[in-house]
Image (tube, rainbow, N blue to C red; front, side, top):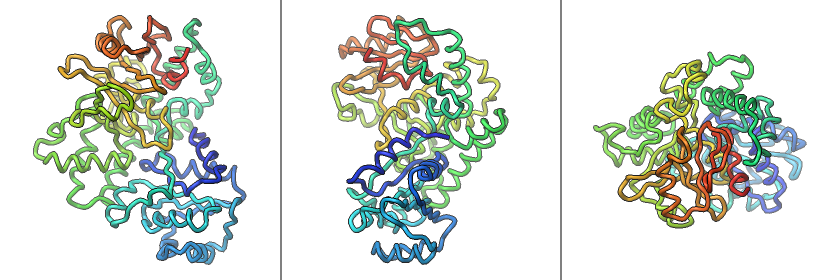
Length: 437
């Protein structure tokens, strides 16, 4: 299952100034598979240490002396690590916070050796142990669920991607291709981007196993909280995990999570979940200029979940219902807003944890679902099933800020009306190209 982040790994490998690399992201987004599948094609030798399965290696990092660490690893593995030819991969690194600290000294004392660590819920583990992330000596790569284009690649639909990456507003969009894209989009709404769920579908060619696998992943996250979070935080994390998938697209209120829980405790729990990559804040920006995060309204925000398939699983929607109902209206439009948020995150560099924004005016009479920027253009994005001319909030934003371009996302065909681009949901990856046409 090819991941587009392989290009980032390749650039990192060839960078003479590289630092040890730390892959971050939620459990089961495919961090380990990505490293191991790429490394087999790239290095002559790969030594993988999984701290969950090979606990004897924990003792190798009692010292931060790199030569002592390498001698201990050699004694246990009987393998020699050769700079330029070998990769040392430290998997489930959150179980060995001392190994995270050692990444700094690999950079300082043995920079020729390629070293990658991967872990989930790192922030929980580090805070519990009292460690801090080594700053300036470790590079992070944030791995998220598969994007829609990555799903198409997994389905051997690269020819379809090629068509979508070249079509313009001046062409008549092939109706047969549009129908095929919508079918594949419906599949993605059902499956989401978690690799295990997608792999099961590709193997079995049925959606029947998807809900069970998705519920299993949600249970894994709950169990992880029990391992890493302090006991007094567990119930707040648990409650957020239960409630947030049903609040996508809505302004976030702590009282809506649980009226009997203190906002400050829920706020701290939400910060941890965002740090862990399980949730994303969608900040309300005034959009007065760039960067968008310079003018956020701190108390106004929405929350996005990790993956659309997991959001769908919490609502217990039948996969076969989703194959025929209006995607824009499912779960009051929440699934569509979740999908758009995920796709916009996928457009951002993987070395960046990701930021999302929306906008409303001070009176709350107008609201735009997403606001982003491509280079120096601030671009409002509205997710609606109606016609382009009826997008009152989008028009209001564009008139207020004299926007060069606005985007209307729906299942309607690719078209342009004045400076508003109507783009099908399955072509969000093409937005950077299309706004420059």
